[in-house]
Image (cartoon, rainbow, N blue to C red; front, top):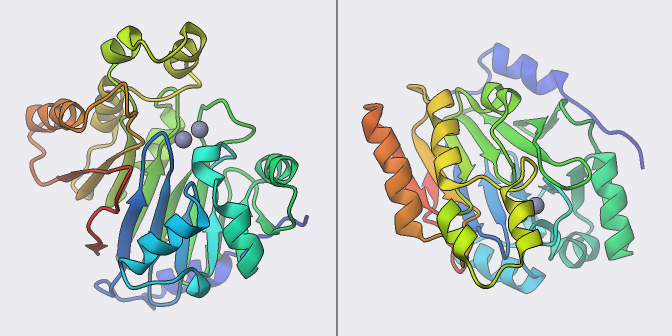
Length: 282
Ligand SMILES: [Zn+2]
Ligand SMILES: [Zn+2]
């Protein structure tokens, strides 16, 4: 595996105003939740998946619903190696020869589990690189995987940031996702529902609640408060637990905080496990 990184060309073009604002960028969360996560970003030059946590067949079906096919992808970005983020990766990227962008520790763990050869393009956590006309910035998140990351995808129409699978909202996460136009934020569980849930063993509850587990609705609201800016226009509530959260509960906690802060310009969408969110055109 070689460390892959290319950046200067796209940054230079951003600086020169090569990309006009208003060029269509499309973003669709194909599905999100504790049982699978996958999102699709399309710009003039680049078509990417962010995670591949459904079966290849599911990903193909969900892309077809927005008139797209896996064959036209330029690559798949991987946040970390948990099954709900890579379930369809080997079947999709291996078969189609798609580039897989992740860090070395994640690649090694994927190889150990999947035992199939993939076209890895390795980046160093914290670095930025370009894929076509998208600049991808990676940053570390506190989660119980090998080297988990979040992403900020910089496009000509603004940035799309991912902050899911994190036990707590660190200062670094806040610095990186601030100023994004679109934020995909984890609202995994309601703390009381998790504590009272009969379907989770105590050890798993401890794991989820730990500083390297998952963000609760209230923790997500606290994190959001740190990064609320004029630039933020679209907020996706993501990675909801099926048993320990409810969409209306996550929404009411986040909306309550947004209203308190007077930031009514933000459009909030709760993502779903079983079907894609409406496509957002930036
Ligand atoms: Zn995870
Ligand atoms: Zn996950």
